Length: 417
Image 1 (cartoon, rainbow, N blue to C red):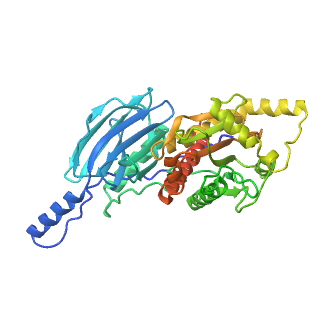
Image 2 (tube, helix red, strand yellow):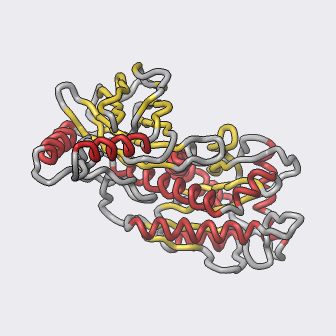
Image 3 (cartoon, rainbow, N blue to C red):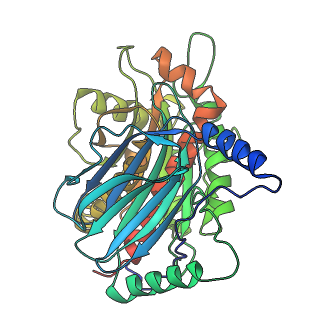
């Protein structure tokens, strides 16, 4: 269901970030020099576009502050980061990807403490969310800015607000990261998100030789994700289980349907006999699995009730036909859109499987009236994934990315066609 709304965004002008210290001129110069030396280098800048959205990624030697501003004549978005130097291999050019709302970009040292990326717009645009990621594994710290279309009126409003702030007596404030699960866009209502930690009770799911169980990993992760979504203030959140309880697959689906959930997300962390297989992925339901591994994973999940002493419900053929038809026509489209939104936010944050949006015949995704996806966080059978799954920083980073994906999905529903 599409909801229409008026765009509200706080545009923040690019500012000089250093505050002039008091005292003799020599002390001021020394303080400024020391502050400048503490600022990071901008290592690289990438801009990618599709017809629906764009993304700016700024690689940084260390985390830093940023700000952004809308400008006209010509229409542009400028994004500043606090940085003393830049070593960007290609400081200007055309964005990668398809034709979209950004025609070209330019990166320049705009001051001793500031590197600016100017995005020239071919159509009105607005910042959806902007956030800084800490360095992890072999990835540097990053500023990620997601950009979506705006109306001409919304863009003009943002430009006017930026001019208003720039002429105000009070100093401008550096932009802060959009909270995980938050957005620069408002939602008209609070959607209900149903989170489903896989397995539970007598069904442990995948298990390592050391006795680490999938059911415990996914419950802890889901509770963290719930916390982020609730704290954002944009969502109502329900869990199919919040303790070590066993639920049949059809009970999980029934809970989402009975509560009229806006989306259903099942969380898993599976295992496979090939230990080199690793990475997160997001599944939508399809009778034809993407590959053999996907079929094995779905079959294993669907057999859960049989292993636990239950059998699958028998449905009349005509009911099955109706469910499948409804899924194909409406829910499959929304589920795929949700999966894409989640993967788009996971990409800069975690290791993903090749072709991370995948299809398999997971029974738990069979609700005909609720967009549903299954998130595989990783594989307990892979040493690197296993180390990540047990690490608090990785859990937080992944939960934040998933919350951002959920938020961007609902933003897309608010946008007029």
